[in-house]
Image (cartoon, rainbow, N blue to C red):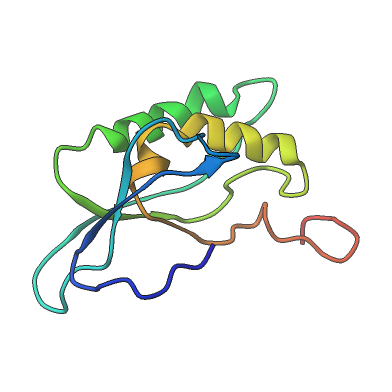
Amino acid sequence: MRLTGLMPGGMTYHYQVTAGGVNVTGGDHRFRTFPPESGSFDFIVYGDSQEQLPTFTQLERHKLVADRIAEEETDITFVLHVGDTVGDPENPEEWNRFFAAGGGAMLANTTIYPITGNHEERDGGGNIS
């Protein structure tokens, strides 16, 4: 979803997602626009959150990282995910597990910028390039 008309300068916006008149996000969530042109800000960089079955799942590893990011005491402006979000980007179940693992306070209240990793790079035949 593309949002337009947002005020820059670290403005906080609150949101809820509804379907059929029912709040499906469970509560009030927030995100902030980028801070003013001058001054400092905090952000987090992480990646390689894909699961490696049968050794571990998204819920066993990625959830630990996502929960820790959500517990940060500093006001995080954004999270930069440097790729390899899931092992097979064409598998919707892997995406479901990624969002289930990070779907608590981190994804609900933090702007995340994902970058394509080698596991997301596919050639025309669905093979990792």
